[in-house]
Image 1 (cartoon, helix red, strand yellow):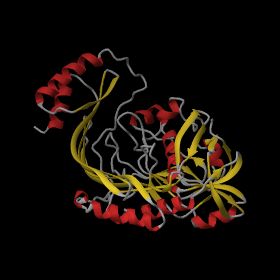
Image 2 (cartoon, rainbow, N blue to C red):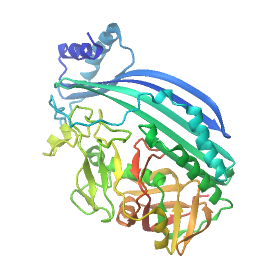
Image 3 (cartoon, rainbow, N blue to C red):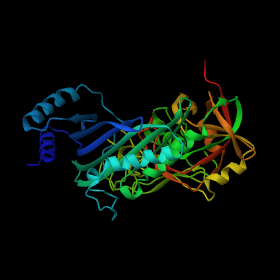
Image 4 (cartoon, rainbow, N blue to C red):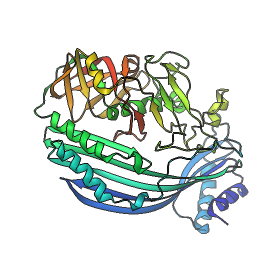
Length: 439
């Protein structure tokens, strides 16, 4: 008997109610490069089973690494004892009831992704950076393919394949002059390593001899990379789990204007090249495209079956094993190009990367973040010079409401500190507070 069915059948024999089994088998390669040379290469494979199980309103999430019948029997025996000591969850209302018909959807999948000439791809990107004037490049290249199998106690038995390529590069001219760029894709066709090298090298060359920035109110152009960090925060705050936990600045704002009319945020699990594209969520419910925010109005929170029943609505097809989650976050692009955005600014800052984004109050949306790599002062529509030693200290709702323009240059990327990638263009936000880092 196949291992997933064995686990499900044994759990049912012991009186467990809802059962979700997610089996993931993956193969991967990881390359690290420094000073323009590859310094480390790793390959690996893994098999993992994640379990969501309930018994008498007691809910448990766990993982399995050993798949022999003996180890599974021991695991179930221990789990049966452990779950009896958990409190009842009276806010739990069950998982999706299958079977389902899924939308005809074929996500991009590069079966031969592990057979690519990684060294040639990396060297091409490194050379592109050096040709822009960089002296040194550091970064990582990751590639993987996986098979995801989902089995539940409610008549769901489905599987799909995924692949991913990721390249992150920091380029340097000197210690104070750096640029960062990355890209993530399911296929080689949309994996533009030349862009990564050129963009990071260009930013590094522009950021030579930065001057100390001054505190005050500025209009800010966020490149796709830093705005992906902010988009991920918005997407995660739209999960009903974040709302209930008091960790969402979108709480009590459903159907209200929360952002500029220029801003729309989409969750599209059926986006073909979306790195987290999937036709089913982790209960097996069919996924669908949805506007989280449309023309500035908060349309929906993200729900699974249980939370949807609690709030008397429909699941949005965003079930994770623990909480509802976004799949592929897309900031709807605008009509102007990136370069034209600068002409709208009299006094502003151009931000190419962010790090250490931290909330002082998740519920109100107060946060701060530090620009990293190239940041530039803009005066009268032109970049004047690079700046350093600044911090953005503001509020997420204020950021969203002050969006003035969204460009047409979308790219799929992700911040190093966020698990959620985003497909986003550059974004112009007005009247943002810039402070100085604590000394």
